[in-house]
Length: 118
Length: 107
Image (tube, rainbow over all chains, first blue to last red; front, side, top):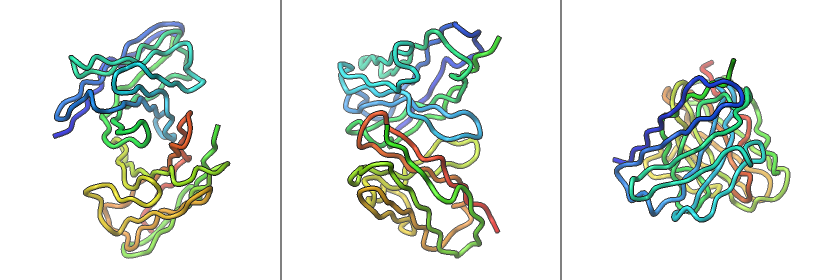
């Protein structure tokens, strides 16, 4: 069974850092692009970043560019999102998802909550 | 950035009704349009990709159509498990963008 499990969400102060992880199982992780998508509870979905299969190509939303870094460890079947200089507006539920060609998201994790507040 | 506008933002319907949700892109996106369903407290679920391709395992009462800037998601006969929020997404160019969502409620 294809599964994604996010972790690492927490309460952090503005300006702080956090690293999210997404553990993949049940499929060949290295064959899939991966996305991070976030959602403020009660609001819509917002795409954050994506990474290609070997980790060489990465893309970011302007709102996180220069502050967030997406990466992956195909040997560990894990996707990461390093989040620096966090702001209140980064508060959201963060989902990871699989993507065959870097487009639509086929499988989603259950999300991990990030709260940025003093 | 490509803006995605969904309408309506919410609707009330009865079991068995035919429901149509529209999504408009601010510029042509060919058929790079996807639809997701999300239930409260759950992750989104892919329903339709490439405007009209049904994701494996999704009931055939769901269908998608359109190309260019105007797209439609149709539920041919609404079932109790279909009450949820539906979102469109363009994957023509980055940043990938979502519509604001359409909440389908029970009448």
